[in-house]
Image (tube, rainbow, N blue to C red; front, side):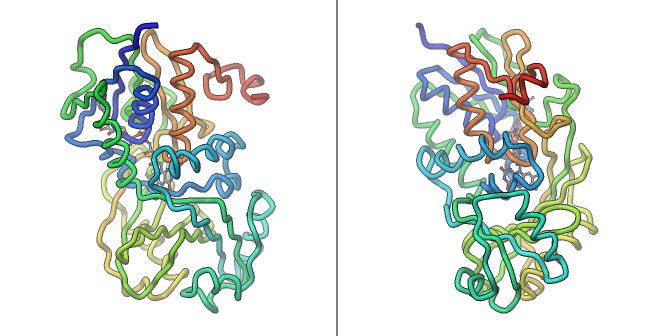
Length: 339
Ligand SMILES: Cc1cc2nc3c(=O)[nH]c(=O)nc-3n(C[C@H](O)[C@H](O)[C@H](O)COP(=O)(O)OP(=O)(O)OC[C@H]3O[C@@H](n4cnc5c(N)ncnc54)[C@H](O)[C@@H]3O)c2cc1C
């Protein structure tokens, strides 16, 4: 079969992983991005948590099974992740929440205060109990986007077109893979926005080495070490399609959660605040949806880095081999459930 010509719209994590999968399958790939550089959309503010087992607390089993594929992808295919596990903690008054979290998840070890201190010495004496998920990982999303972009740029049948709006593109290709995230809402009327905010702190007083998730009554708050004394604190979840800047309330909530994990965060510098809109469908599951010669890959919600590798693999199989994945292809809901 002659090599396919593929146009990928959007150079976020979805677009880049898909472009890379098509390039590796031998297709000629053109990546069209409205911004001047890759990864400046929702992917820019992500935490980079690769925590499929923790996500089972509130997400469908599909997120766990697809998410597990991301661990191999981001440690071997595009090696950029740190597989050091993640730690889930709760203040003493919220220990029943930790028990509930444990009931809904798997692949963890229960730690007491001494074991927590062995793992993360800076948390010594602060928490009585924790769940440790040893197989989970994390990455720096901006480094991951840079790595994927470099791998793509090194292929001779891949071209990037920056500062280029998809609506202005012409010229024939075999297939268009539309990965423009929340900006695809004019084409996908059932796509909704879930606003997320994060902040970046810098302190030399704390040396956490792996992501710490604090159980919080409204949304999971996690602190992800980014090296050089920097810690990403995220993320709010607000039903809204408004991006913009972080609100005072969200800053207050995230900062107070960080100080619950360790009071020295109170002295940290705030070096960045960010907000963006996660693209989501009603059930918070991703979709591959066809319209003519275009496949929309969207709805990655709070799982962009976690799900993109599994979606990319399947998108290639669907387009090049005619494969069918009922769980992500708007099949009959009963078929989705069985899959
Ligand atoms: C605060 C926060 C924390 C998060 N933390 C995590 C986490 O820890 N782990 C995780 O897995 N996920 C996380 N997520 C979710 C993750 O960021 C998203 O699921 C993911 O970024 C969505 O990727 P995308 O490629 O679909 O969209 P985007 O990253 O938004 O990319 C879409 C791209 O399309 C481009 N575009 C739009 N319109 C056009 C057009 N007309 N023509 C050309 N280009 C166009 C945009 O410029 C953009 O670059 C988080 C999200 C937020 C907001």
